[in-house]
Image (cartoon, rainbow, N blue to C red; front, top):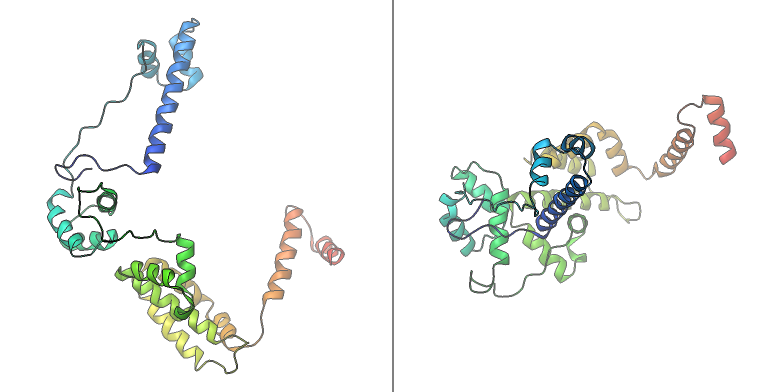
Length: 280
């Protein structure tokens, strides 16, 4: 895949590492085949011992130097007809790869988001003069785990850098929906905490409205999470309205499961009961 008239896409460091690792493996096979051939082993025996195809062993044995793979011929990209649209959207400030891909799909693009991601990555990493330089360097986004944590924090607790990071990712419509749902659920749970002076206002109605919206938000991961909550709705509602916690009970259950696993599930009830009592 390549942008029209601009050469191949820039490889990522992970892709370059995999490419180097693959070459090192082929080189090791080549040197081992040459060593065995020099020792007088028949080609068929080398093929069986090394698990290589006979044609590969024969080619390595008859080549005095390591055969490098030929460079791939650049083919037209499915993205070529849409490059003008991408350039215009990029210049207008839409630099989110998923957002660009969704816009192309509306225009009839049938490919995956991968080539659009690579095109966007090339634009961001192009040398000075190749594309218009950004006005100021943009700090890298936090990791997915860190971003997930930021999404459930109260907005007033975030510093300037964290707020800026969230502002960048919510430019995508789907991410914005996920962020809004996550914040609402986190705020609802916080409002029902036992340490608050006043109970939350109608937490069950608020949770019901949130659950209904999450189940039909159009984001598969959120809908799956909401469906799981729907199956345990009584427990969730109890957690939102009652002052008690099942944490200690869950801890004891985990302890019993651990003891049972140590006996590979072969303990009967009497033995399991005795071990639990002795471990207390």
